[in-house]
Length: 439
Image (cartoon, rainbow, N blue to C red; front, side, top):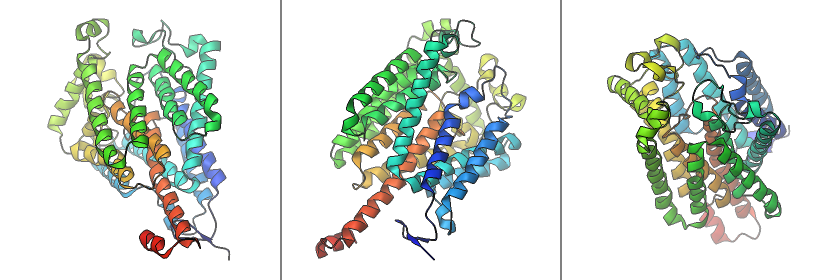
């Protein structure tokens, strides 16, 4: 029987089907990037979900299982332990959930998407994963431009649009909302700046300019304001000595996240309030309602996925009135997590997706700095983004999925570094002292 010695030391009967796994990651990105278009509705959501997309995710899960060819069950294990613990708390919260049926569907989707990404990236490697992300976001950006140019009534928010009238004139392309289009455009920029071949310099420059142009005309203020800081953090990791990264990048995260929060609370409050109470300063009203609920349900919350979009049983109806009750989220990912799974659960999630990953990349100097710069930029962007928007652990929303891709790159990069170490040790040119140092 033929066996394959994997880089993690396991003996497996058959190698994974990397082409199929790469295609499955592409399928996830297709569902995620087209998600806003597929689930769009001008009616309040009651947690019913989209059956077609749910079936597509189950089909992708089956395809990933087939592509893994797991001769040993350990090949199925790829999600890091801190993330497993955070997911476990979310699953546990279903036992006290306000709406267990809706919460269960949302929890299944969140778990499946995370597992598919981590297990597939682990097998196909970091280089192919980054290229898949680049291609997917470039294709989306091109489709957005084509939609704006050929179908402006659809690709640009119109005056007759339902909801916030300040959306009028903002570019959205195929993404249904300017903020989604802004996120995609913004995240493409670090993918084209870092870890890209020099021979593609001018196409990369053209792509960066195109992404920046669409981001500007999307009028997505959050993404526009944060991407520069995220790229700066990536450059800091790539260029600064290891001992300085540890201080500079966390400081950037805290300072600019606080600045984004304060800007939303205090910039032109009277003017913004007169224009639209849902814009900018309206968030402070939403946050007061969430904090009031959290004060009464500090430890457990409402249960995962059981606060927003669950109909009249939602707790928001008891803590707020008017337009706030019609929102889909609280415009703060950390508060939204806390009201769902309590403060302990929110801390577990933040530790698993922000703190632990940063410790891992700061402590392992073997990792390819240019590729880790992408990871840093994505983590920085996601952290700051969630001070005024909500995406953390939220099923398959764009920012959550992009963050999971970034986190999945870390164990893939570590495995590649381990493999390189073993090659050096086994090399006939390796000295005895080198082998001792690497053992």
